Each structure stands twice: as structure tokens, then as C-alpha cells.
Image 1 (cartoon, one colour):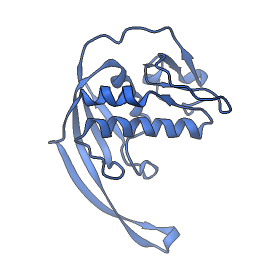
Image 2 (tube, one colour; image 1 turned 90 degrees about the horizontal axis):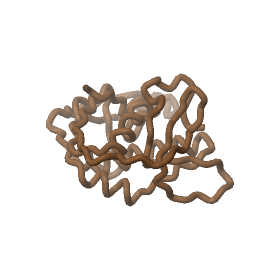
Image 3 (tube, one colour; image 1 turned 180 degrees about the vertical axis):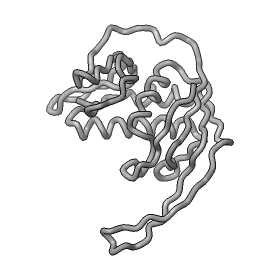
Image 4 (cartoon, helix red, strand yellow; image 1 turned 180 degrees about the horizontal axis):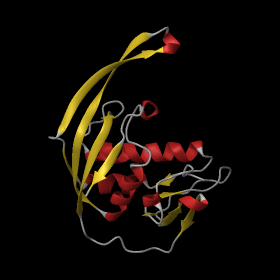
Length: 183
């Protein structure tokens, strides 16, 4: 199982052309099989292939909590944003004893076709205290505001919509990277 109890209803019936899952113990294989997520039954159903179409879309992600990517990744690079989101979902799948099998090269190629506008993002910094380090101040930073992604294909749109339920980037355990998709 991948979806937690109480997963938003908007994920119901979504298809993903990027991720599939299988129980641990089996040898993973890369696949681009479309899947239907059924949160109420806590399962992923494999569907017959359907065309994703040729239409491109624009999505606006509004970050409700600051987002930051790991390492040298930047929010202005579509590949960094999409792969960060896919890694997050892959990690959650492993945590739920499932394999998340992603065709990383295909995903990167789709992300490379996108453009990102970060002009509406605002930097923010704050301090939190660490009880594990006797109240030592830990400096945090990130970006809030709107991130506009142009040239989104249907499979990427579905990945991004699903990602709104599990946040994006680093420090998600602290609530960072929470976003909604604006209509």
C-alpha cells in the first residue's frame, strides 16, 4: 500500500504513467504501465495503456509552507523539481513496503520539456530550536509563493497533483514543501 488513511478524495481515480508498485522480495522492473490509485481500498490498480495526448498545460503551485530542494538542486530547474517529487514518492512507497518503479530517464526527458517561472517566489528564513541538541537554534530557509510550470504533459500533471498530498523537497518532516494547485 502507498496511500495513507484519509488520503484526499482528489487522488481517487487518478492515473500515473510513471510509478508502479510491487511487494518487496520480487525483483524490480521499470515499467510505464498506467495505474489507477484507489485510496479507499488502499491499492494501486494496473490499467490498460491509454494515450496521454499531446496537449501541454500550465500549472501554478502555491507553496503554503517554505520549500527547499536538497543539495544543488534549484526550483528554477524543472528536472530538479520533478525528480525531487518523484524521489519523495519513491521514498514513501519504500516506507510502506512497496517498490516504486519509475522510468527515471523518461521522467527526466519529460521534465526537460518544461519551463518554470520563479519570479513570484519569496525567500524566507526562520529559526527553530532542537530539543535533541539542548535547545540549540537551527536556522531554516526556503521559498514561498507561486511556482509556474509551463509545458506540463498529462503524466507530469498527475504526478504533481498526487504530490500535493505528500509535499515537495527537503524537510517535509518539518512541514515544508506543502503546496496547492491553483485553478
